[in-house]
Image (cartoon, rainbow, N blue to C red; front, side):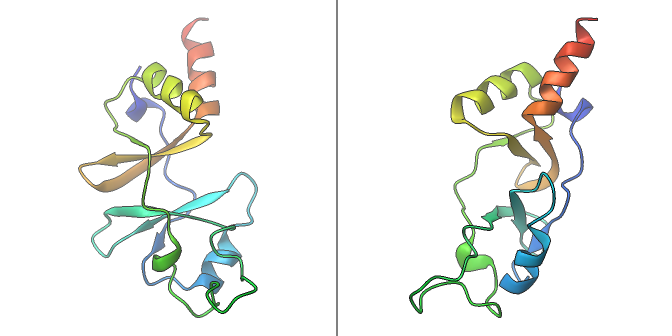
Length: 126
């Protein structure tokens, strides 16, 4: 089974122009621990987490009016739509990831969770 058969649309997507305040408001949703950040063309640049956007004690912390761009984590583990689900699930378990972004070329096309992989594997054996 391929990732494209069970991937879903990301719950939310931020652009590089999104403010820290807006990102903070969108993050505390059930099951959402990070949000993808894309450029104007839809290319995936990275992820932001609530921790990334927490105000810090020092003046270097994220300010509400800042863009999310300086706070994103650019080092991502991603999957492609044509990857085998079992291979991606194995990689996610090895890296300790619950969710992964699905990209084609550099463009965000979906999201995939370890839970989805587990449910798909269970269905395919019944």
